[in-house]
Length: 183
Image (cartoon, rainbow, N blue to C red):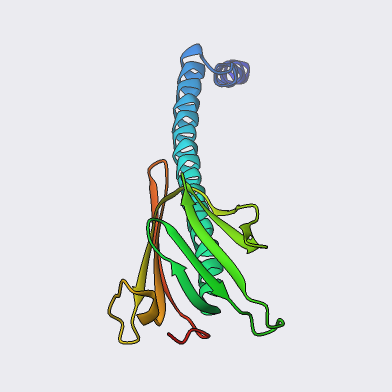
């Protein structure tokens, strides 16, 4: 009786340890493939979101750097000469330099804003300070904040800049008071 019982226990143990079936393998592979496909989809969405964020951040950075450069020069303007049609031209006198006056021109050319400095009555090489530029608006403001078409009445200059790349658009507006300008 003991042998028969031992034999039955051994047979049950062998049935339990015989391995996994083909159906179990197929189900495990299908479940693994489903999990992998889900993770791939999530990763693709994350990468696209990151790329859009990078493009947007690039536009913001380009716009801010360009605006800071323009505003910095305008703050030291001593006279304005041209301010329409995507062109802003003015003379500057920096406080930390000698009494020399520089004539600076900002001009929208295609999708760029270029900065050039007049040397010996000719403008030097135009240096791009921003690309992806859709619009470059210039408004002259009186001391009370109202706009004026006349340079001799202006106390400040307002710049509206719109940059576009693909589906991304970035708009920035800034106003600079001309510290050295006495119309």
